[in-house]
Amino acid sequence: MKKFAIVAGMVVVIVGGGLLTWTALARLRDARGFGAAHRVRTFGETNYVARVLETTIGRTDAGLLVVVALRLENPNPFEIALERRGFVLVDGDKDYYLPAATESQSDVIRIGARGVADNELLTYAVQDDAFQGVLGLQLGHYYWTLLKGPQPYTPALNQDEYRTFRRRDW
Amino acid sequence: MLKQLKFYLICLLIAVPTALAVYFYLFGSPRSGIELIGDAPALVRQIQELRELVTVKYSVQKVVTLKEEKVPFGSESLLLLVHAEVLGGVDLAKLTPADVSLASDRSVSIKLPAPEILHRYVNDKDTKVWDRQKTWWTPWEPFNPELDQKARQLALESARAAALEMGILRDAQTNAERVLTNFLTAVGIPAVRFEAGNEREP
Image 1 (cartoon, chains in turn blue, cyan):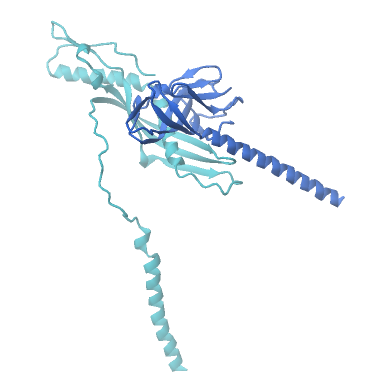
Image 2 (cartoon, rainbow over the protein chains, first blue to last red; image 1 turned 60 degrees about the vertical axis):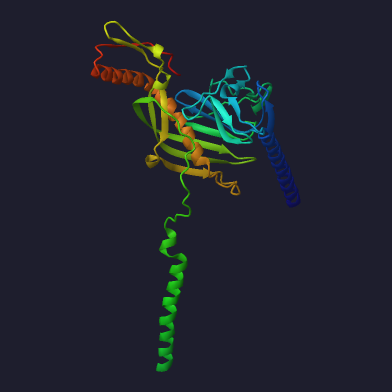
């Protein structure tokens, strides 16, 4: 009986540890995909490198918000100007959202020659059902990157409560 | 015996001040204060001409919660009591000559630019971190030193939304019209009329 308990305990520990390791590895792989650098091209044929740093969702008096933090790198030997409205957010229902420029932000993101915009924030006011499917961000002319996977997510967020993710499986 | 006692007493008298001197040198009060380690010159990054007429200020207090999910496991959360100031008004730089017309009776008709939130900032004096914690079972995860700053940025978003909800744009428009009417009346304009401008920002 004692031997059986030991064996059963070991099996539970091994299976539990294996599942935990598998989950951790899956999340790490997902996080790597989320934060991968994308070489993109604008409508004006300008190349730049974009990397999503994190996605923050929150609820304010005006409704649900999505704040995307981007790192934008200009590998060109000249200044580039990226229109903020070019970074369109789209949800699973094909609802398109444009970023709102705040007072301290301009409509055009300018990055000097071989310069970097390290923490460019894009703020979107989205509908309550925006997280029921994928969430994608348009980068440049034809490139889309996923911010969230297809699994539905109903955020239990109170007023002025925010949550930050660095992966897609939420 | 007395000679031995005297020797120990002298040794003690020398050792105690020496130990105290060493202690205060290493851990004394001058080091516990704020030390200026650099005196970098101020650098003007950008000079921008502004023609903003700020006509209303909303002081908004918010309790903001930010939870950061760690990879692969765990989370860190911060509860911040934020006091933010939101300033509304009109940007007179957007006023064009076509927006102002003078009638034959010397009355002026103005099409004011749409009121907008011109500035918002966190009042550091009244802003406090109420609570900060991370999941107990991920002790290896370090606290994110930037979480506080991030929470402040998000609090500004909340303050902006709250101010819009409370009608800051309406107040900004009303006050701007009153200020301009008073000013133009003072310089001899008999009547000032305001036409509907562009759409207000959401």
